[in-house]
Image 1 (tube, rainbow, N blue to C red):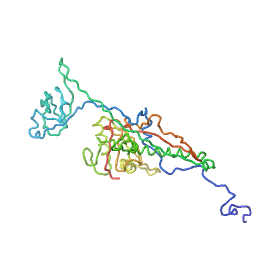
Image 2: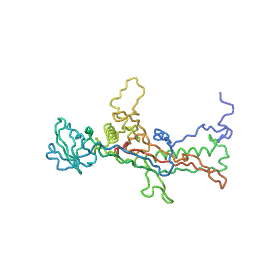
Image 3: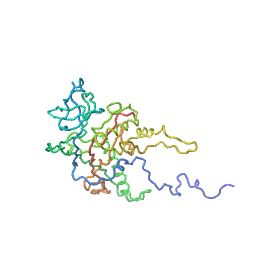
Image 4: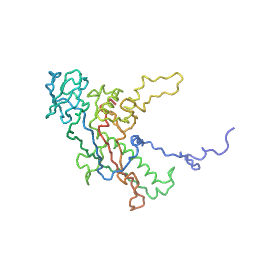
Length: 384
């Protein structure tokens, strides 16, 4: 029996009698996540000037290198060696060469030369070579002796400049008055989206930002920009196959471990964040591929490394789309802050109206405080 009641297809091609069926949701299809900012959290304080400064200090070095090309001959017998920084040594220091069991006693320091007693404490003298690292085990003072000259380090002032992030918002009077699909307040909706965009840009700038080559304080023609993490790293830059870094361009677990070890040896810090893009995150996930076991009844396959734990630090692996595809960044989050200028965290600022519209801007001013640059590092030149 055919249907005799009124049906939708009798309402005409445009269905003028039927209400629109629009989902109660506005989807944002552009990435808006900020995983690094989320991992770092809010700073403990705000900046009070466009040039944000902090102080850094270091302990007196306890190692140096031999700087004597001719020492390769007769190095097992010599008692006078030339070093790169003789001011690091004192009479009474016990020193030891890298990889050697011999301990030597420093008996005199003059100019760039250090006089030593070989085979101290019955240890066996071994050959000393140019460029070898000498570690100062400790100093043995004489009982009742006068105090030697005081030694100290000088605090160093570091700085970075704030960068202004802004996005205008403008909605016409008509647009604000009409009934919108799923949007109760168009101005509020547009403000929220601009804020999301600026947070995204802040994360990207914290990672990849650079300061102007001249006039970093800015001017009427020079924009003031902050120096990001990658641009701030100079000491621990690792390249596969060179220096302490083994392997080739394919990221391997041995390379991650070698980088963490080098940072620990050079600074004493243990990074707790490994920041990567998508390509290198997949490589890190592959570290466990050979040890993963799946039973026949398993209905879920898991290939994910969220934490990398080694002798030199327990690191969360953070995936950020703004990290260069050929790089892995190692960070000590306790020494990084993303700092707003006082009263200049992201906020909406209404602007003067000269027509039939509402106007304003979302604005904020931030800088990066990256303390003890030696506590962080970057592995570059990887296959992506």
